[in-house]
Structures are given as C-alpha cells and as structure tokens.
Image (cartoon, rainbow, N blue to C red; front, side):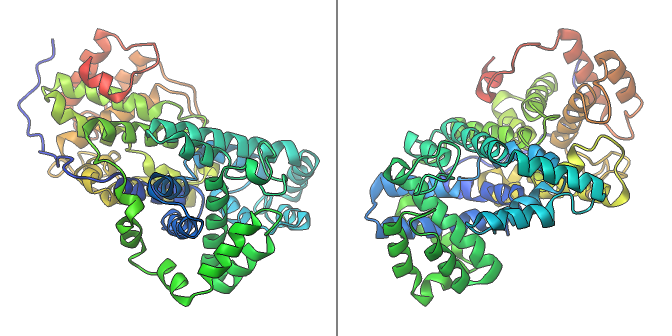
Amino acid sequence: MFQPAARHFARVQRVGNARLGEILGAFSYALDLTEGQPAGHSIRAAWIGVQLGIAAGLEGQELADCLYATLLKDLGCSSNAARVAELFVGDDRTLKQGFKLIGPDGADFLRFVEEEVGRRESEAVRSAARDHLLTHAAPILTGFIHTRCTQGATIARRLRFSENVATAIASLDEHWDGSGMPRGLAGNAIPLLSRIALIAQVADVFYMAEGASRALAEVKARADTWFDPYLVSLFVHIAGKPQFWAEVGAIHIEKSLFALEPAQCTVAVDEDYLDDIAMAFGQVIDAKSPYTGGHSNRVAFFTDRLGELLGIPAEERRPLVRGAALHDIGKLGVSNRILDKAGPLDDEEWQEMKRHAGLSRDILARVGVMRSMAMMAGSHHERLDGTGYPLGLDARTLSLETRIISVADYFDAITSPRPYRAAMPVDAALTVMAKDVGSAIDGDVFAALQTMVADGIPEQPLPKLPEMLNG
C-alpha cells in the first residue's frame, strides 16, 4: 500500500457568508468568453433585465428570478460551440459574436453567411459550407438553439434554480411573432422572463458595439416581431434617460447589480451548494468540445482519490476537488477550431491554446470563496522543472494541490480520445507518465496514482462531488 510522505497542504478559505449572486456573477464572465462578448455582458444584461422587470411590476422572488434568468441566459452556450465552428468553418466565438449583431431581416443572415463562413479557408471550402448552410438553414439553426437552450435549462436546475428560471433560459430565443426557435412559441406563450432577457441581451450587444442610440433603435425596430411591444414601450421609457446608459457602462455595474434587492433574496451559499456550482460549471466546460465530455468530472474524481491517498482530510479535499472540476474553465475562451483540430497546432494556435490556463486562474480569482483555488487550478500545466505555462513556475512554488490536479489532468487526458489520437491504454499511460516524474510531475502524487489504478478505476458514471467525498 502506498504510504504518502508528510506534505504541506495549504489552508483554504471557508465559505462564510458568500452570496449566490456574487459567485454566479463572477462565473458569468466565463459565459461571456464562450459567446465572444465583451467582458461583463451577462452582468450588464442582468442589470438591464432587472430594470425592465421593475418597470413591468415584478417584485420579490419573481424579480430575483428575472435577475438570474438574464445573468445565466448563456449557461448552455458551450454546448453548440463545436457544431458552430464545424458548420460555419471558423472561430465559434467570433461567429457567435457576429451572429448576435445580425438584424431581424433574413437578408442580414444571408450577408453574414456570405461574409463570415469559412473566411480563412479556400474558396472551395467556403462555397461548400455556404451551400450546405443555406440549403439546411432552418434545421441547422433550430438544432443549435435547441441544444443551447435545453442544456442551459438543465444546468440551471442543477444550480437549484426554480422552473421559472429554467424555462426562461429554455425559451430565450423565442420571438413574439412566433418566428423564433426552437419551439416557435408566440406572444404570451413565451415566458415573461424570456421576453425580458432577450431584450436585455440585444440591448447590451448593440450598446457595446455601437452605443446607446443604436441599442435603443434596435430594440424599437424589433417590437411586434422579436419583442413584446408592451415591454419595448417600457424599455424605451427607462432607456430614454441618460443615467440609464451611464449605469450600464459604469465600472461599478457589478456592484450595483448585486446591491439591488433581488440579489439579496437568495440564501447564503453553503459547502454543498458550492460543490454543486463547481460541478455544474464543470459540465459547461466539458460541453465545449465533443472530445472532453466528462473530463472535468473525472479529473475531480481522480483528484479526490489522490488526495485521499496522500492523507488529505475529506473537508480539506472539498476545495481541492472544486478546483479540479474547474481547472479548464479558461478553455471556454478558446476557439473550437483549435480545441478540436485533428492535426498539430501552429505557433499562433498553440499560443491561444496556452492562454486557457491563465484564463482559468483569472476567472476563479473573481469568485471570492474560490479565490484560494485560482492559482492551484490555473497552474495545472506548470512543471517542476519550470518549463511549463503560463508562468513558468517550478518545484519551489508549485503547491501540493496543483501537483495533484496536474497528475489527474495528465492521466485523464492521455487515457481519453482526442481529435489527433486515440485513447492510450492505462498501462501505457503510466509508462509514459513515469518518464516525467521529477521533471514535470511529482513522484509522491504519481505513486498515489499507481495505487489508485491498482485498486481499480470505476467504469460506471462518476458520482456527484459530495458523494465522492462521502463515499
């Protein structure tokens, strides 16, 4: 039986009085990355949505649901990223950003396809992709939106939100005149919170791209088609005041949003809830690429088992396992044209790929109760010999937490299929990893991995995080 050496394990922040809104507001920046939106898009949209909700007479829990439905409207956005990149033959983040700026006229979509599809590819590739999209536009777009909305609603439920929030996310892209997707709902059959969230989304997208006048004009132009005309009239009234847009563009918009009464309608987040949040966003991460399904959950599972073998108490493993579940959250900011590329990356692509580790660190650093795990999770590609990335840290500065996550990530990565290679058998993987002991990975952690493998790796679907720690 493997006997762990005595090692220092950093003490972690306790959850304390952390509020749900502030935690999810920090994570919303990861959703903005996936959609190619300027940082803070979800925060600004939520603020706009709450103001519109107040004007519509919402209060109490209904107004709180409005805030969260708008803040988390893009929860399912990663689930269609790979398909967007494949069918539009380009960077999914750039394509998604451009798609949100398309006007309601069908001619706008045709122009977008003509200009953006396969922009960096040969004319033959572009032509084939354009022809396919235009021939099958309706089912393709419906499929994109259905996947996104269904996944978003599922994750919202996992985050313990009400059906009002889940159904609002599921119906975000329905239009007042019935021309929306995926179900073609019309009028009051569309949930009120969905109608509010879509106006808020469009308003912020055009505000950030072209200013307040264009945002207001775009919302007014879509009354009776995309938008509920009554809500548009309310929006025109509140958005006609200069202070409205001054607040939307203010640096302190995040503080302003979570100082509002709706943000105070939630209970403080306890340890179990924080576990659920980590695993839910792990699901968002893994949905980005068909080659990473379950990766975050498996890395969390392996991290928990390695930590146990190394003598780390269960309660101290909880934040470590959360960090493992979220270690790749920065990949939401990487194009699927790179993540899913079947061949080797060129220098430019490799530099973009390497950015994900730093993005993971930066996103987690925004989450007050998870700040202690930002460096440990964002350093999972550092090496003991100092040749890793993004900071070139070495054995003098790499914590035990990081060393555990690094080994768990390395092991799952090489034993899972990738677009450029098949999965490696476990025995072969251990042989490869053994060569990196001392230079890239920690010897004690690798010994714990060998023990874990010898004990047998479960083949059934992995349990939720709390079950790991109690099992």
